[in-house]
View (cartoon, rainbow, N blue to C red):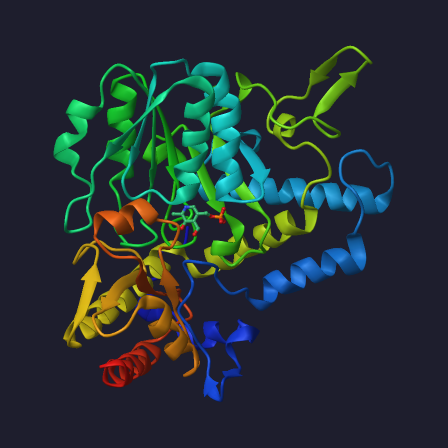
Length: 412
Ligand SMILES: Cc1ncc(COP(=O)(O)O)c(C=O)c1O
């Protein structure tokens, strides 16, 4: 892993790798602060996908011809890169999915359906994205399991003092986000996983907002499952990852049935491949996996410690500048936060403010951010969110402050 510090990196040059950033929107230079929704893609990722379709396109695994061998090698090579990136013991612990949402649904519908019984408890937190809530609600309807929630405190951090009383012997799974997509809170993942383990519960980490932003090592974190999305870490849409500890994946039944995931099929019965292929029915997103591999190479070329440092500087600067504006309520912790700031302006609904910003070339996101229970808890219909990545600059944040100040005058 690279150990370069943020100050040793030419971030302005890196920004030039992202062609989409070089444009005007509504007559203004684009400022893209919607990175928590999806990040932009650098040239090498676009090129890797293009190269695949121009030179190597074929289906994987079953073909006995040159292009199929190349496609298979590139697809499985991407799996190796993901495994190394996440610190997995083996590439067999990496299942390609469509994204975080599909990864969590896979765990709920295979591991959950097989191992959870009526009366068992899944412990979540109040800050979960709908994709780490709705799959468990669906499973609860089918199996009679109960859901329990670790509360979020006013400052946007988890109320860890309540953990011991919630973590009873009925809890069989603890599933939580690494970084909150609305509050920016960075949760103590290793501690939470250790606590889960101490009562014999399995842990699942939603790393959608962390995998591209900070070092994530599944063995250091001590988690059993981890889910993330390629498109939130410089990769293409439609590709994501489920990491599962080998022992757990091996004991899980298949999810979808079809080609690619079988050893032999008769009209009566099928035997299934080992993980990860058991969970990848049908033709996979080959180009997406190859693009994700290229995204990982790109991120590793910069180094996650430096990206974290740079993102943290941007988030802290934005937090400080936004707090200077009158009539603004900022959500989330004042320190230890991920690369985003959510806020509400007294004078304007988040949708109106976001539309106003768009007309100035500034891409923010306004709404509930798939966190409706959390918004309800904080007594707001939604927030406006500015989320950053390493190609963003403090100058862009200054421009955002000007736009927000102008909006405050406009809406008052
Ligand atoms: C914390 C968190 N979890 C899960 C998701 C869902 O990711 P995807 O839509 O890529 O499946 C998101 C997306 O915003 C997220 O922020």
